Length: 537
Image 1 (cartoon, rainbow, N blue to C red):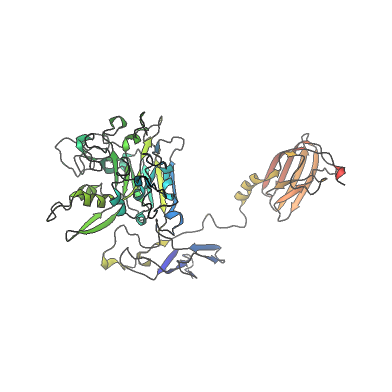
Image 2 (spheres, rainbow, N blue to C red):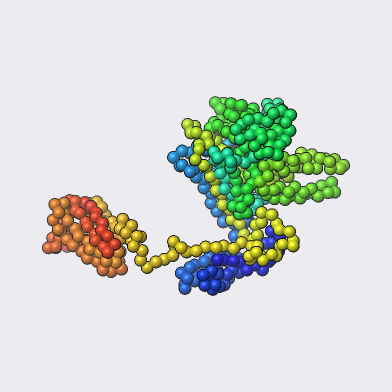
């Protein structure tokens, strides 16, 4: 078990650990080992008596100019059944002014049209090496790096102000899962993606709640005039309009909490399932006139759990966005300060605040010819970020509990064991499988090998041998040609392509039998011989 001895201990998750040591506790013996250096040094410490090497360093937040790969550790997607890949996505490209250039990572600057610039260029690139542009082949990205609606009518971000109020450091490690199991689905608010309120259903503006009646998990609409319900099985759960179900869930693996999901529809794209309140994108990216369809624009937004405070009109506005609550707070957030005096907040103030809580955005598509949401074939996207060592509470504790001695003052503790990976002197099962590694090289042999020492030398090697081995060589008729024995630390043995009498063998196929204490292996070898070249002397 490893725990960090912090020099900063605070009751708030805002405590930053700039300098700290660590200790290793052997839970079997109780013995404690202390670090030689603090975690702000990238130091590797050897424990020879334990057969362990431990390297601990304090990383930087995502987006920090010193962070390795800009804070993205890794990302990978997987299907339960990889033979049936039923979900893809709109992959980003870097063509200026292209609707598919929806991720603005990089350092591109367009002197003639700044709307084509990558995010925050030409001032300071948030992702200069485009590390975050490659998640799921460029079909998912941090919200802060997405094109906004002024840069592109199809841009997933609300506006530049919503991105300025977001922070790369807030990007968490998450698992995003899509599944046919309806018991795991996420109640979501659906937002309008059509950029023309004349064409959208109900005349709704882009990024506002969809006009359509809410639906249950089976697509049944809420009765008009039914009002909101508190029953998750009802189609009007949370709201009579603008709500549906995302077929899956999202987990913040740093805190263990489930996160809220919002998704979009372009209600003008009826033929692309953009007006049915269901998460069912098509596979179409463009129409025949090269107008963007993006599968009906079922954009997926992953919300963060965070509290935002802003001062305006002499008062402090606080938005406490929770972990998963079926988007209930997100739904009422625009109306929190409707009674604010002397004037209610305009959308230009509260909408950027609300959308700055978005962590990730994806534009999924279905795959032509594949069933959408097949039973038993879940899709999972894992994103892992680099974060400094600190508390990561789901909810910060009340002050009276902040210093409760739960373990290590609520800072992370890491438990591990070496079972299954510890070094052993001899493992019979492993030794038997290692027989498959025994080989003969080169094979086939065409009158020459790099092992040969002079023009009269012919030589091959039998490789990956244990310390003791007997190598017996037969011709294709079963006649014994040569037997070699090995009892050394070397992992190979040479055969000079001569028989017992010291005469070079003829070209052809030979059977090589390797006998060891762990078992046997039989190899086939083919060689062509060259005539001796006496002119070299």
